[in-house]
Image: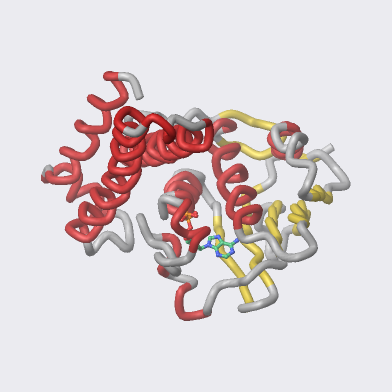
Length: 260
Ligand code: ADP
């Protein structure tokens, strides 16, 4: 972490207390528990910091503990801290309007293909993209990439025994004079989510099972970023279908600008 990151994090955290944030927060749904959010994030920051300090001290003081495994723990915890800081910064910047909406007509299909190239090194997983045409939408390319990226990362985290994530692009023809729509589905066959939790997961810092090993890796911010970004896109809708033990399908829809 460089100093500037820490400064920006401090500023972002301070913002949590300000009236301005509260106004922004209240405008967003599901923001009734700012105190809880601060408690959660403080806890999430403290855990990796404690680990880093602890392991570094042990390595300094006990000769045999200066091992590559222990160094790796420090690196992993530092990475986790970086993810957390980046997520908090992303969300605070998005919601304060510091990152403006950069709208353009973009090839959504190509955008997704490009994202998938980043996963080619994960050879233990299969990522399938089903799309039979290139579809253009009006949106912010970088932000929509973030949406797809977050959904795929979650699907990989909760991946099923088939080790497969399927992404479907579906062209929905217009009804009643409305626009044609494109629907993107990100599907996993993993553990699924209880029906009673399906609304909560879009909240900041929400994790279904805080004691769950995999949930402990996450920050609980990914879906809130997805929600915030899609809310910036006119006509966008999104949601999730899930069945415990069978997997989850996260989806979003946008108006089609044109297709090829
Ligand atoms: P995190 O960084 O913890 O993954 P998210 O906001 O992305 O945060 O997700 C919130 C919670 O929703 C997760 O902790 C997890 O419990 C649940 N969740 C998200 N995606 C999936 C999925 N594909 N399968 C099962 N649970 C999921």
